[in-house]
Amino acid sequence: MFGNDADFLLSVHRTHAAELRAEAAQDRLARSLPRRSARGWLSRRRDPARTGDARR
Image 1 (tube, rainbow, N blue to C red):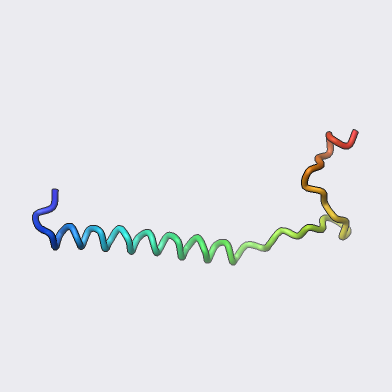
Image 2 (image 1 turned 45 degrees about the vertical axis):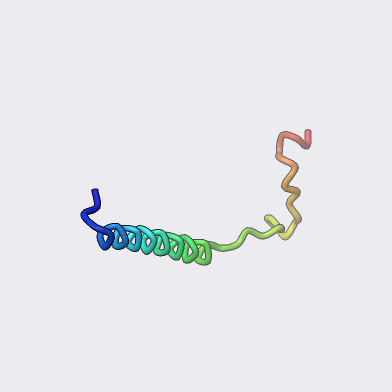
């Protein structure tokens, strides 16, 4: 598959660079999305353990 060590090292470098670019894109996306607040509609606190059906 690899003709020599230089081809192998170049392949490893390209793979690592692609992984770093993917992580950077993921971080940018995470920063661009609004954070979810603990408060819901009309500033009431949401209880994450409760659902609409569980209250009945």
